[in-house]
Length: 123
Image 1: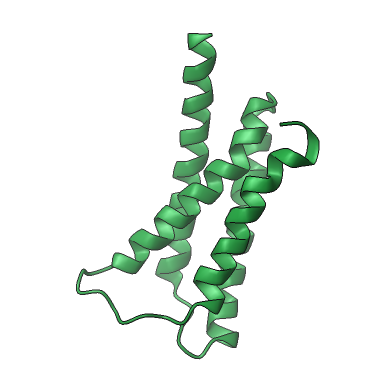
Image 2 (image 1 turned 135 degrees about the horizontal axis):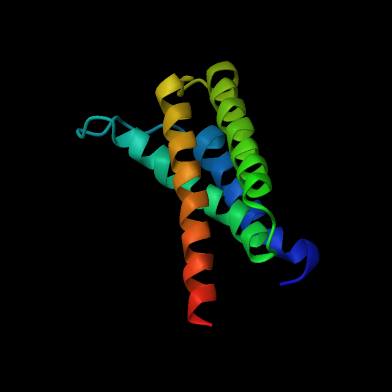
């Protein structure tokens, strides 16, 4: 993919996360402790991967990839938690959710890096 087209997957992820985090009514709590944190981790793992993958493929320096990808995820994690607390009736802002978001994003960025490195070694 060239140019702006490489960002479509990340944009689709962000739109899906808007629906999941802000528009979809909260369901009944799971019987599994901290299950919602796992969901936040997985959601942001995918987001970190989709934001970092095009940057790693383009050969951007690691500091740039980490700073921009994690920075965007941090901005969305904090913004979505604030919006949940301020604008939704069935959800609340939780520091634990934001932490799970950031850990998931970091894992996704690292996973993208490892996948690109593996791919380059095979070629």
